[in-house]
Length: 296
Image (cartoon, rainbow, N blue to C red; front, side, top):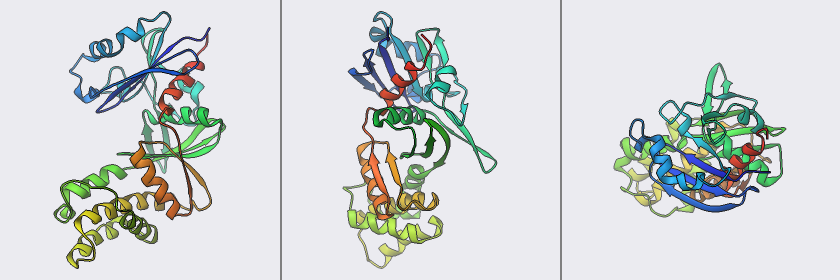
């Protein structure tokens, strides 16, 4: 008989959990700011028990944890699975904290141009999205500090790449000469300026050149500081899309929070690409899907 699941997403700065029934339906959710960087040395078990111990006490419950809890700085290191990998490969490589009860999901690794690339947590979202959508082939983008682009075939991630888009935006936004041009906080998205940034990036050959236009547009008073924050966002996201090569006519599934998903869908549309948003339950569905791949 299927077991109830305690699904945990333990990231760098946050900790989220969901209690799932045996069929994957979400019964309850919790969240805190106790990401792995906020857990004292040796404190992972105590934090886990304080947050989710009552859920795990349910008869026969299985807990699967994805994200940075499986890194070297986390609760227990879960070695990466090499691509191509699917949910069953992940299930076979779980790092068990408490055998048969609590396990950490490994991330994925792949080789690109002679260098390794890695992800932790995004693989679970991808497998959840595949199950939610009822598909086994797709191109995914997971926007964030380090955006991931993943090519899935036959239900397995065959290759992926990482773009430091969010981090680059933050560095330019707050720690470069451009920071003197921009307001201290981002306001609402200026759609026209965002689109202009995307279009400039798609026509360009380098963010190293286009980024300086944030300063020159301010110097010649062709835009406002508030609008230029949206313009810079468009530049870095547009650069990410340009670097993927020809995408016109393709469908890209976007997994992320609402704000980023909407920006990526807008940017993809400017590039002639259909961007399909995936629901916020992808992580929970992915952990449930991995649990289903375990032997009885």
